[in-house]
Amino acid sequence: MRNEPATILGIDPGSRVLGWGAVRWEGPQAIKVVAFGAVRAPLDLKGGERLLAITRGINEVLARIAPDAVAVEEVFYGRNVQSALTIGEVRGVCLLAAAEAGFATYSYSAAEIKAAVTGNGRAHKSQVSAMVARILQMARPPRPADAGDALACALCHANRLTFPAAR
Image (cartoon, rainbow, N blue to C red; front, side, top):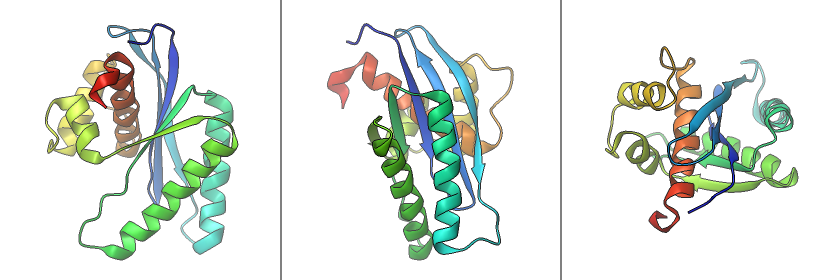
């Protein structure tokens, strides 16, 4: 079990809206929200220009938060292969930006994140959002929803700090 406090930045990669959320882990019973938000690339940007805008946005977040760890949600492959590839590019940009800045990176599947926050790896998005608000003692679920998903990712990593053998 870890003893020293840690700031964890969670990232929910998206090609239109990239959610981010940071928590401060001070022990199993002391997790607080630091900040959360979204990086939005202008819709008229395509390809490399879009990735560059996302990179600049995530670099600003990394510089502002200066996390001890960055947890990034893995790409979920559904029915749309093109969407998965695009989100994979965004995820790669996030991992690269964090690594270039010297931050440790970790990856978690959507099922791992949902299970860590709700106890159910198949929980609905609204259940995850409600539990994030409850765990972090927020008056209401975080908005945008992508930021709530990113906070859930950060909480998933915080669970690994509390229970390192679980990974």
